[in-house]
Length: 218
Length: 232
Image 1 (cartoon, rainbow over the protein chains, first blue to last red):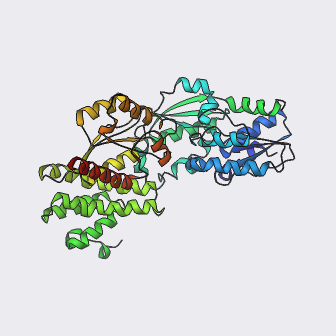
Image 2: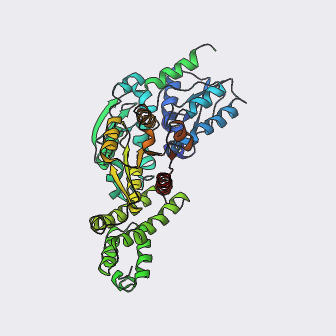
Image 3: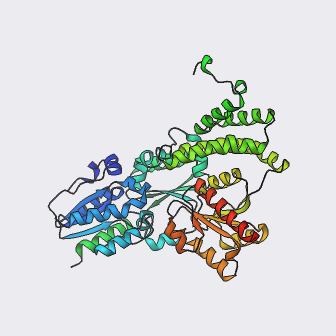
């Protein structure tokens, strides 16, 4: 299995990650979760778990996620004894849940990674936080590829007000303690002209979901 | 660009100027659009003619290229910003000169949602098409819509949402209108990135509009039918 620190964030954004290893269990995940899943499985010593990722940039076209996951699950079943889907709803409006139910595979509960990293109950407790723009570790690393360039802000920074005028703060949910990433997230807030808030979430319900899938008898 | 190549807008004849304004709108050049609008007004064009022929005509090209995947959101926003500059000059004049009014719309982003780019584009294009638009802004609970409908008596209610978590709120608004026996008093149009036609039907809207140009055409069509019914 790959070293979490050696994952290429650009590749995870645009092309994803092919499965590697000889495990019996495959987790099909969003590329934005690769580093975190690898860290969790490595620490836990789950050598029987392999990881495949779809491109994280699919989040900019969430209507494509469900069918891409379906294809990946069907393909994985030719090789793996058990397959799990490390996505939450992620803007699919229930479409991914429908596909997972049809295929009989489990996925992560909740609306999106911001919610399950913080814990779905804790996150929904401040659901009135509608003027917050969230970054995870992955998004802090990939801010330019995921936010700045797709919105055209590299060419037209004057559009910031049109895109972010209704936001008030950037909430950085950190999964690991990394001063460089923290500084990077802070600079993202500065570039967008937003207040900055840091919440250390750890891996949250990503970790408990994986543990449940991988260690429960099936 | 060299001085030799520089285009002096005031030296162009009307037809050339309108064509140039189409290009400038496409390129999102706000100052040039404002200058073009002022030149046409100085030449005696009616404000409504400037609006429809120069600005809406140009934005229609932008809208078509967006739909065809030639232009993307940033370019559309720049074009919209340029058109907004022109509209700011024309709006007070349109009121003075009694421009035709096609209908009236109340529009707003639903509760829990602060995204307004699409809504603002729709508002602007609807105004460009001769609709009076009352924009309620973002994060609107059902009460805001009801109050505005009561006060403004529009033909159309427009609702917008960008999030899958907020779009179901449109049904809350429509169901409330049904409960109060007011649903059929308004044409209800909905839009936003995660929506589709199926969703629009499921929540009881009259139509889902996939972009601002479709919203304008749909609104015109429904208002036209409504007026025909009233005449019959």
